[in-house]
Length: 612
Image 1 (spheres, rainbow, N blue to C red):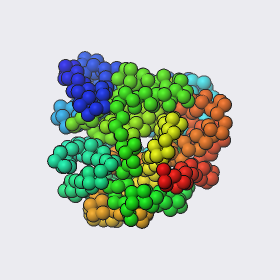
Image 2 (image 1 turned 180 degrees about the vertical axis):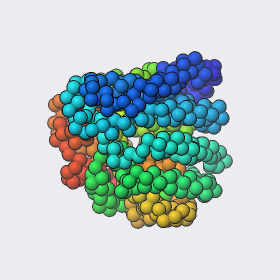
Image 3 (image 1 turned 90 degrees about the horizontal axis):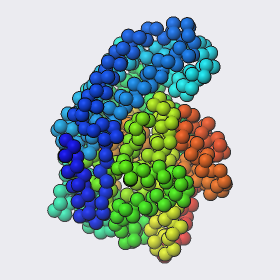
Image 4 (image 1 turned 135 degrees about the vertical axis):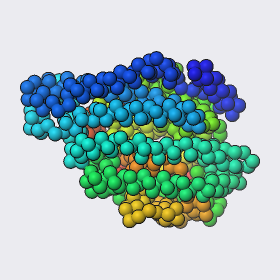
C-alpha cells in the first residue's frame, strides 16, 4: 500500500509538469496513520471500541449523582475522557475520508471508507448517552458547578450543547436515528459523490471529468465555452433522474428528522448548528436580494457590453474579459503569491500557511477518480488540517488556494481550544478563508500598474464576490423552496429545474440568458447533498470580511492581533462577542450594507474603466 501511495505521488507530479503547472504535492497522510491496514490504525479502532464500552459502563445513568456528590470537578473528569475519545475517533474518520476522496473510483478505498463509517457509527451510539444525559441535568445545578474552574473551562461547549436540548429525543430514538444514518444520509451522499466522480464529459474530442469540464467555462474562446456548457448539459440531463431521486430522498429524510425533533423551519437545524439567530440570516438574505439589481444585474450588463453581445449565455458568465486574465499560473508561482500576500499582513499567518507546502498537507493536482472541488479538512487538534485542491493554473485557482489555506490557518490556530471547542460554526468558519482571498487580491492589485490588467483583476474579483454572495444566497433560496415544496410530495426533475431557473433568473438578471440545458445545473452542487443550507455561510463570511477589511484599512494598528485572537477562539465564542473588538455587530441591519457596499464600489470603479 505504501508503494502504491508513492507511485500515485510520482504520477501526480508527472501530470502537473505535463500541464505546464510544475510539481505539485500529493498529501502525506502518515501523520494520521501509516496505511489503512497498519497496526496503528487497527489498534486505535479497537481501543476506541473498548474505551467506549468502558466509558458507558462507568458513567451511563450516573452523571446526576456525580454532579451532586463531587460538583464541577467530578463532572469535568468524564468530559475530559469524552473529549480525548472524540479526538481519536476524529483522527480515524479523517484518515478514512481523506484516503477515500483522492480516488473515489477505487473499490478498495470506497469499502474501507464505508466500513470505517459503520465502525464509527457503532462506537458513537455507545457514547450517545453522554451528551443526552448532560442535557438532562438540572440547569441550576450545572450553572452553579460552572463556577469550578475545571468545569468552567467547558462552559462554551456546555452552553452550545444545552441549546440542542429542546430538539433531543429519547435515548432509543436518538440511537435509531444515528444507526440508520449510515443507510440514509451517508449512503445517499456517497452515491452522489461516486456518481459525480465517475461522470465524463466529451468536449472537443476529449473525455473530461467534472473539474476540467467546468474549467472550460472560463476559456477565452467562446466556442470552447459553448462546447463545455453543452457537454455539461448533455450529461446532467442524462443523469438527472438519479440526482432527482437522491435529492428527493434526502429532502424527505431531513423533513422526517426535523418533524420528529420539532424544528419550526426547514433551515432551523442549520441555524442552530451555526449558532446564528434566524433573524440574522433573514437580514442577510433580504439585504442581498434587495441589491441584486445594483450588483449582479448591473455587472453582467457591463460585461455583456465588454464582450459586445446583447446578453451573456450562461457559459459566458465566467468568461475572461482579456487574455491577461486567462494566463496559466504555475503551482510554485501560486504558492509564492499567496504566501507573500499573507506575509504582508502577518508573518505568523504566512509561517503557518507555508507549513502546508513544506510538510505536504496539500493534495494539489487533478487526478482521475479524485473528488471534485476544494476543501480544508480540520481533522483533529492532535494532528493538523489538510487542504485538497484540483489546481489547473487559472487565476481563480490561485484565489481558491488562498481561500483554503485561510481555512487551514484558522483550523491550526483554533486547535488550541481542544476537540470539543476547536470547531468553528460555519458563519465564522468562512472568515479566514475569504480574508485570505482579500489579502491575495489586494497584494496583486497593488502590483498591477497596467490599466487593462487592473481591469481584468478587478472584474475577476467582482465575479468571485458575486459568486460568493449573490449566487450563494440564490442557492439558499433554491434549497428553501425545494425543501418546502418537497413537503407536499415528491418533486419531478422538471419541477426542481423550474425552481432552479426561477432563482437563477432573479439573481443573475436580464443580461444572462439561461439557455436550454441550464435547468439541470443544480445537480452538481455538493452542498445541497452533503450540507443542506450550508451555502449562506459563504455570503455571511464575504460580507463579514468586507467589513473587517474596511476596519483594517481604516485602523490597522493592533488589528492583526485582534484578528489572530478571533481565529484562535475557534468555537468558544459567539459571533457577537468575536466581532465586538472590531466595532462590528452582525445583528445590526446596517452591518450587511457595509459589506455589500464594497462590491458595489468595485463595480463603480470598473464602470469608470470601460475603455481600458
